Image (cartoon, rainbow, N blue to C red; front, top):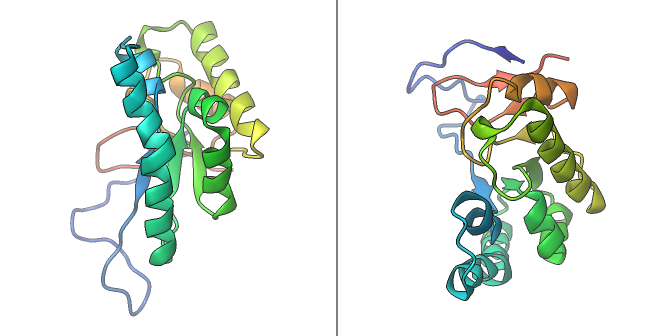
Amino acid sequence: MQKIGKQRNGKVKLPKGKRVAVNIGCDFDAQSIWIGSFNLTSPAYMSRGEFGAEVGAPRLLKLFDKYGIKTTWFIPGHTVDTFTDICKEVAARGHEIGHHGYVHENPTTMSYEEEDKIMQMGLESLAKIGVKPRGYRSPYWDFSPNTLSILEKYGFKYDSSLMGNTIYYHNT
């Protein structure tokens, strides 16, 4: 992975005739954020994740279809395994799907082996719905010292975890 140049605020290079650029990304965590990030597994928290998958995601897909918008959805493996049909629907409607961990884990506390295992688990889940992701977003929007080398190992083309005015991509 390499860091490419900073983009100056307000200086986005747009195609001729275009005046605005918008990027819509969805972190489709469902129940995984409550389980993996907060260890909150009561029925109340699980129902919030279920609502996101059963009601929220279909509403977003309908809205995006209405306006002909294609988006990127970063989906944890747990969400794919638990709510497979709606994840398949996201892909079937032409939206990009990126890797977002397995159960919304914090990579900064993991060894290389643990983080690599989580990467494999997420990839296996996405493969079950026919997705080989090009992009990655850390569930915690944070990196361990191993994250970039793991992303390179699995051939990711880009990462969208960081909040700076830069983009990280793999130049292959």
